Length: 205
Image: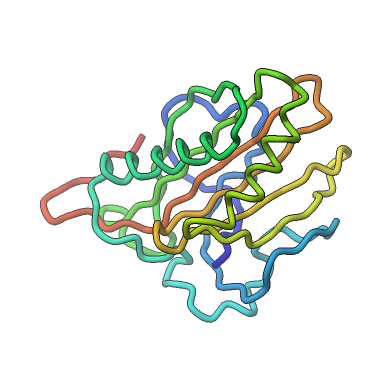
């Protein structure tokens, strides 16, 4: 599975997006992609394989089941914590928490998804490369599958990694900012589409 990036109109989140994270890292749109890991300098955005999608759920995101907003946010936070551990080096994560957005094409009073954009800055700049190498290894274990690995068209040709976990119904997009004054990793975790339990409301933030 592969999550297609684009801006999320009307999305709400706690705090501001980290300055080091491009807005395109707000991930939405699940697409099925049969290809394995690739590394290239293509101008295509990950997910521009829409024509090959075979099992995309209505609205583009996979069904993540039923949960309250708090439960879904907690699950996404746990995935972010797992990614933090996967870096394997000392560092600091940025503060803004997850946000809640609508599921395209579905009743916004009944369905929602959660995204969590954050930044990881290793304590030692030299550890940025080690953190990315650790993530490459870990994001092919424990239900994680790396779907794309490529250099983008930014002036610094930043390395991008996209991985999915079908069991957890989440995707992660990581951008390595290796050539900045303070090297870091831009990370966004995106959930599938949740349905709120009967009697519950969706708390947009």
